[in-house]
Image (cartoon, rainbow, N blue to C red):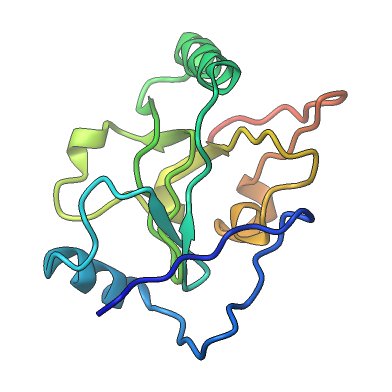
Length: 161
């Protein structure tokens, strides 16, 4: 089986490829990984049913995410931890955000990846001057638990308790 990935357009959206394709479920994605059809550590992630190529990381990107992780570690309440570049699972996606605040520790998740009920905050650093893809904005549903920010006016957010 061959695997094609989608690249974002200049507008930050993903174009539908010219050949007929079917979206993948999270279960199919996991089965492909188990079968060795997708290599562990591949530079793709499942977003809204599509295999999408991850962005490369520049030195400023790495520095910004390291600073974010360090600052979050300083302020997190007990019972929460900072995770980086690790999968979280939703109904139709398995993004690997730059930074995530998760309930408990990553090693608590040996049978599954954290899901929406386990995530207090996701951070995705992008070099594009556009909002993140819709999957990154809506993957965790409830606006009550969602944090949004901009360069000018960050919205304070605390993990749900």
